[in-house]
Length: 204
Image (cartoon, rainbow, N blue to C red):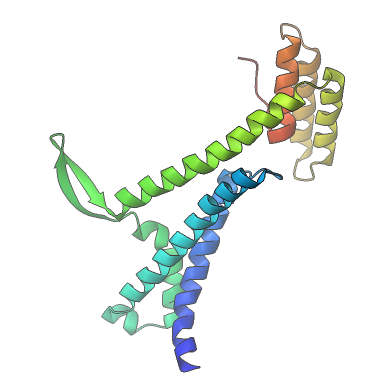
């Protein structure tokens, strides 16, 4: 029981960072509602692998900090909260500088962390992008009238939209569906993209 209580602050730090990492990914990416087995598995590995890796780093960070006199004198639960909340700043610390191409380049945990983060983000984005390309291409084959109706239904049913956003979205739908100077293929593609992503893009 005592060993469990001693480990609890570490687990709290791990939990905080795990939640923050998940929320960060969820803010950036909108995972597809349905994927075939292979891309779904790749998405889960990249997504949850990054969450678990960050949580593990936070636990290790807490254990390192707990050896310092300042942390030892403090409340372990508060220390766990500080370590969890302060994790994003701590991993961006610059430890030293190295001459690279004639310039003094800061090197630290940030160098490796950001590289790993960018790699994970690219993989997640690639999986989602491939799904969207496939679904958008299929949906864009639908009649323009159907896409227009689906777009309007999407706007009406979106409870997160405020009235001003809803009006703006309806104006955009009408411009794309009936405006001049837009080929029918482009109309269907833009509306299909809106239905799948909520993004209101202008014809390039």
